[in-house]
Image (cartoon, rainbow over the protein chains, first blue to last red):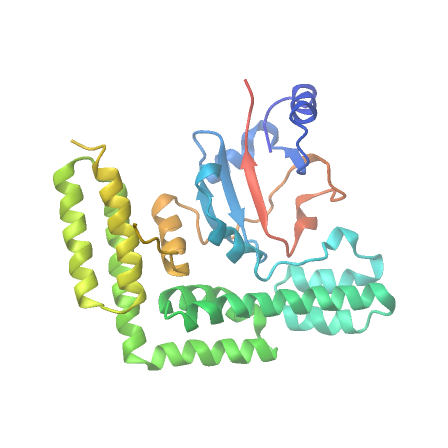
Length: 238
Length: 59
């Protein structure tokens, strides 16, 4: 999207042979809403309309895009017939069980396509949590799971999600790992602000301490990635 | 050879949190005018889809 004029934008889009949908943020209201001070800048929203990432478009990672696509509709609502408006309404209110029920009342091929799109959406939301849980990424599973908890109420997937969250809550080992992941997140924040080699080495040492405290876990693995990133950045620091 | 690690969902999510305010929020009433190259006529019609908003300009 852009706040530029229509004439120049259309010429630019055609010249670049860009195929993506675009629109105009007149007066830059949306830019102000997001507090964007420099462009290009991207904001990624998942299927529930939650902002899951923002930053320079070149720094967007495939894994983040995948997590946004898991649980997204494969069949967009603007393709839906008028008869599907109760499904659309339920979906807009985040009531997936009601949306699926309403879709079940639709007839014909179109109804079947919408029902299937909703099923894929619901299963996708659960699968991204399950994948994190099975990988021992308890903080990721918990964060993503909490985000989907209310919208999956009344569905079998919602029950499975609730069970997974309860398992994390009841497992002291999972809770300990979550604590380590939170410590790592705080270090990541500090890491972003490092301006000299000494501070970088301090972060690396603390990341190594974290690895020692959480061997054979997701904390160890993510810390290793953070250490490698810090070591690479260190070469450019004084 | 250096081993490479795929980051966990938590690292990605919290990494985004570190990078910017607004992650985790659910903006209401996003309005875009004159949508082009799509059958959607308003932002609302991207309901249920993952959306990447890219703010750009040209000089």
